[in-house]
Image 1 (cartoon, one colour):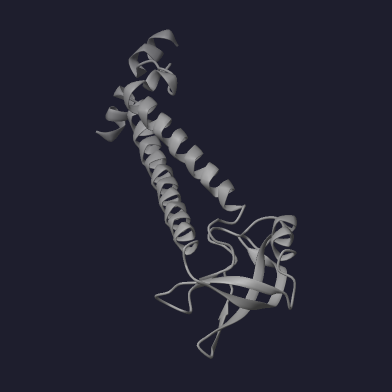
Image 2 (cartoon, rainbow, N blue to C red):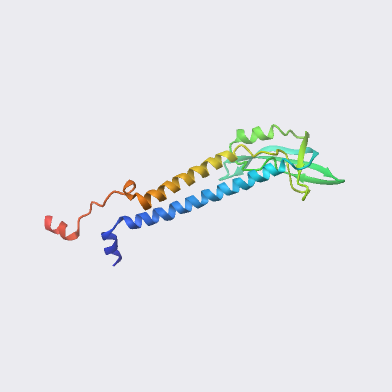
Length: 183
């Protein structure tokens, strides 16, 4: 029965698989855009947080994000509020995973022992960031990929549903009885 259905309309199963795949890619892309939107909103909110003086206690590009071949900037700092010392490690909101030169360009702005301005969340003194408002530069690569993922997924879903002739060629198969007659 299933074989007869495939012979009657072989493109249906291809379309279903493509729809499932494109829906998955589109959903992942939308998730990425929402995640970026939340980071961007948090970065803008951090711009209005009170600031304190801090000291950089570690600053270096470190290998290990992604599949282990990318780098991210590690900048750790300490700051004091009402006699209590806190430590932070957020340079900016967003994705810091990228090239060595990208991570190095971030860490060179925060030299070991340097005084820095720390934006501290007034509701939670352990929540801090050095650069506010703003996101890490490599974050924009992820945003562009997510936008491309949404655009391509949307186009493929539209084409699969409304214009399958753009993606699928009509089957060139002949019915089994026609093949027997010509042989």
